[in-house]
Amino acid sequence: MFQEDPCVGSWWKLIVESSIILEYIEETWLQKPLLPADPYEKAVARFWSKFVDDKSPRLYGFFMKVGEEQEKAVQEGLEIL
Image (cartoon, rainbow, N blue to C red; front, side, top):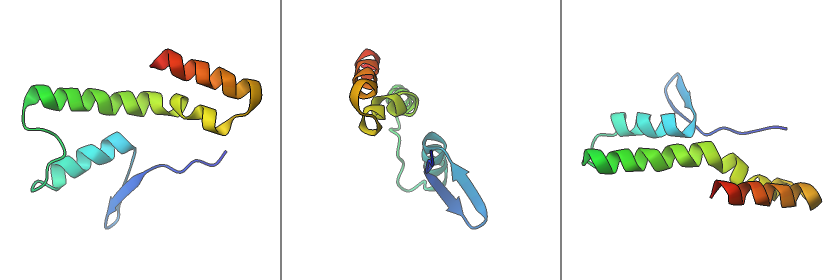
């Protein structure tokens, strides 16, 4: 199956993976930070970013399946939540 990955680039440099892209933006676009200044709030934001990166493929898997496979994907998604 063909899969498109998010990417961002700067001239000849290409960065792939959504969490790495967010870190890149955070470090290069200093005038508009993505993360809160408070260290605890920043850690919470990173937790949820990692959660989404780790779990989202299994959560949206039911969109690409039908029948029994779709029902199984729904159950797996509910277990994650």
